[in-house]
Length: 67
Image (cartoon, rainbow, N blue to C red; front, side):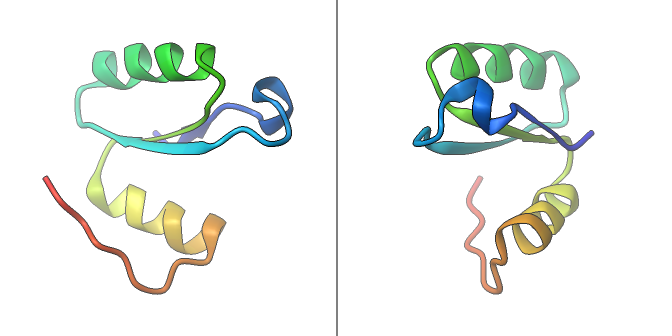
Protein backbone atom coordinates (compact mmCIF):
# COMPACT_ATOMS: atom_id res chain seq x y z
CA UNK A 1 0.00 0.00 0.00
CA UNK A 2 2.88 2.40 -0.58
CA UNK A 3 1.48 5.71 -1.62
CA UNK A 4 2.56 9.32 -1.67
CA UNK A 5 1.37 12.86 -2.28
CA UNK A 6 3.06 14.34 -5.35
CA UNK A 7 5.69 16.92 -4.38
CA UNK A 8 4.19 19.53 -6.70
CA UNK A 9 0.83 19.24 -4.91
CA UNK A 10 2.46 20.11 -1.59
CA UNK A 11 5.02 22.59 -2.92
CA UNK A 12 8.69 22.27 -3.86
CA UNK A 13 10.04 22.90 -0.35
CA UNK A 14 7.45 20.86 1.51
CA UNK A 15 8.72 18.54 4.25
CA UNK A 16 8.21 14.80 3.77
CA UNK A 17 6.43 12.56 6.22
CA UNK A 18 6.31 8.76 6.26
CA UNK A 19 3.24 7.30 7.96
CA UNK A 20 3.18 3.57 8.74
CA UNK A 21 0.06 1.85 10.01
CA UNK A 22 -1.59 -1.49 9.33
CA UNK A 23 -5.06 0.06 9.52
CA UNK A 24 -6.02 1.39 6.10
CA UNK A 25 -8.48 3.90 7.56
CA UNK A 26 -5.73 5.40 9.76
CA UNK A 27 -3.39 5.72 6.78
CA UNK A 28 -6.06 7.38 4.66
CA UNK A 29 -7.12 9.81 7.38
CA UNK A 30 -3.62 10.79 8.46
CA UNK A 31 -2.48 11.07 4.86
CA UNK A 32 -5.28 13.53 4.07
CA UNK A 33 -4.71 15.57 7.22
CA UNK A 34 -0.98 16.00 6.73
CA UNK A 35 -1.12 16.57 2.98
CA UNK A 36 -3.64 19.39 3.62
CA UNK A 37 -1.08 20.85 6.02
CA UNK A 38 1.50 20.97 3.22
CA UNK A 39 3.50 17.78 3.77
CA UNK A 40 4.57 15.38 1.04
CA UNK A 41 3.04 12.26 2.58
CA UNK A 42 4.32 8.73 2.01
CA UNK A 43 2.19 5.85 3.26
CA UNK A 44 3.14 2.27 4.11
CA UNK A 45 0.96 -0.48 5.54
CA UNK A 46 3.79 -2.58 7.01
CA UNK A 47 7.19 -2.05 8.54
CA UNK A 48 8.80 -3.97 5.70
CA UNK A 49 7.08 -1.73 3.16
CA UNK A 50 8.27 1.36 5.05
CA UNK A 51 11.87 0.13 5.17
CA UNK A 52 11.79 -0.68 1.44
CA UNK A 53 10.45 2.79 0.71
CA UNK A 54 13.17 4.41 2.82
CA UNK A 55 15.91 2.40 1.12
CA UNK A 56 14.67 2.61 -2.47
CA UNK A 57 13.20 6.09 -2.63
CA UNK A 58 15.34 7.97 -0.14
CA UNK A 59 18.61 6.02 -0.15
CA UNK A 60 18.61 5.28 3.57
CA UNK A 61 21.14 2.62 4.48
CA UNK A 62 20.54 2.63 8.24
CA UNK A 63 17.17 3.24 9.79
CA UNK A 64 15.99 3.65 13.36
CA UNK A 65 12.53 2.25 13.98
CA UNK A 66 10.42 3.05 17.04
CA UNK A 67 6.93 2.03 18.00
